[in-house]
Image 1 (tube, rainbow, N blue to C red):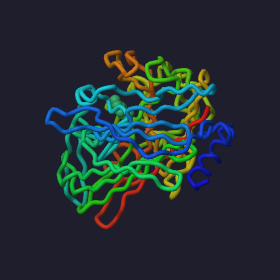
Image 2: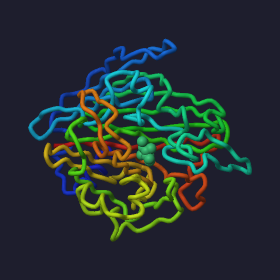
Image 3: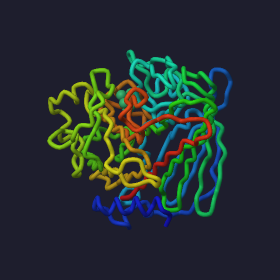
Image 4: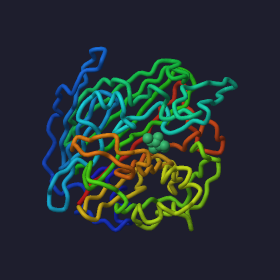
Length: 381
Ligand code: GLA
């Protein structure tokens, strides 16, 4: 058992989940990732889908945006379903995806006014969310074509994803070389390792934007999913969803997920923060802080199917977004529409707008340093 899995297990035990229920219900052994054509961009670029399978988890990843197009896990009776929202064609991903399954960069979540100052120089980023810059700007990493290399290593299978963001792209300084590793372990964990280097001082905050519905994509609301988050504080926001700078206690608010709670339980409370977010769209300040190894931070459960997702990360923050902007206009691979609250995102990250919040953990990356971040997803039923 590797270190990350041990820490997930320790956290899972704290959340009342047994070893037998985590990830390894249907160990099948890994096989070499398989590549197939998914579609073609308007400029003729071919987009490939990579299929991976290990330890009972089946993953499909696109070279466009590093998108997790499908993630299948069994329920308590062994029935597989795709638990992540997406599309079955490249055109919809290009034209209208709200970041379904995508890699997010250079900066996950918002930077206020799309502006920040670094070493006395101010930078104006691409603004794509009212007055703010969201998820790296208009053409973020979710809309880039990544170079993908498959690997098998011991009992693990996976993909290396590479993208080089040129100096000035979306307004960010420095050439940023990014390597993301998706690993499926023999116990069926999906692990993401992010790495980046720069040739000029810059800011970086990478994450993954999977929309989870453990009952299956297209199956309806996640309000009955139960969630536990190891965080006593969160970062309240203004009406533009930019943090005020305060680290507010979750105690006595709808944001208290320290004990397992159904997502729908408090989501209609007339709390100012829920009004701003049209539901939950906030960053939790994880009690463990930044860690060298991934540590348990959250457990999600769909009581009906029994499926669970247990997450561990090295990051200090978690953006929990309750699918508030899904409005019934997008159709998933199941042929069913996605309505508000039909999925949730759990994005491990540094806090939003950190470049403008000196008291938040720093997102600064300098030449010679390597940005590193790891998140592990373990599944059970
Ligand atoms: C993040 C943001 C949300 C929204 C979604 C995608 O979770 O915080 O406000 O932009 O991504 O729609």
